[in-house]
Length: 324
Picture 1 (cartoon, rainbow, N blue to C red):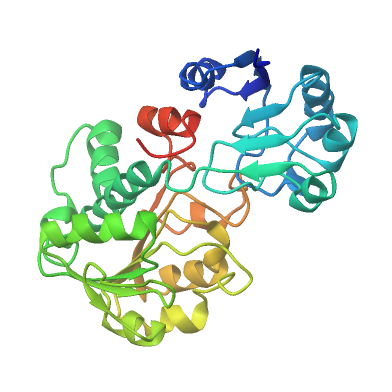
Picture 2: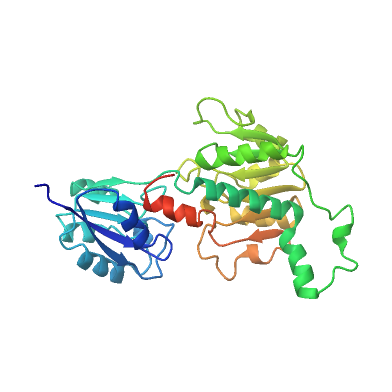
């Protein structure tokens, strides 16, 4: 008789434990226990930066007693956790990368790690396009004009100088053509934008015109949208030099990783008018500090919390450890 695999479904308020349990119900011989992790946790930083991790580690260690497998989105799988539960054999991370797992410690303890690339690519791509359109057409500012003042009488938005840009025939440069970037490219092509792509690691055809040089992409783009992974190579990829290559009045969108973009350089360019607008849902420091200059550069920046991948379908896909 086959023995059951003992699984801990350590969910949270987004990837609910019940979603993980439902996904595992299709697998035979799984004995699932559920744990809802408390907050705050740092959902985007590496495990060394997980906030208030000590209490969560204790909670996780206790719940893992006897478990063979851990399925989680954010649980801090640290050296301490792995050492405390030598019976653990597999950690399945419900996100695009196992940034909450100490991978070196997992290797030493013989624990396999898997994750779910692409699980929220559609949601992130849609949100990115939404940010882009909001910045181009100044939708948040228009909302504030009506909701905050009750009237748009005499608004400068009805002047040529303050009118927004439309996607039709607009040169847009995408830095990265992976699971998210390729979807954004397809959507923007459908709008009639002139899409250009720079990704030295992309193989095969791309949606749009492939650019071999990042500098050339920047020189030709009225809008740039970042879709690269954060590595030592890409950290600070767009700084003062790169922003200066963009045409005057360009727009910058980042729903990938905050550290890809030099925020100080972006604020400088916004303040002197070289960059017309920006739209961000990811930042070098999260939550965004109260004294961040991004909050004070006027009405030309669309700021959102890191919601790009947050959709119900994204949570369900995460629980299944992959796209539908």
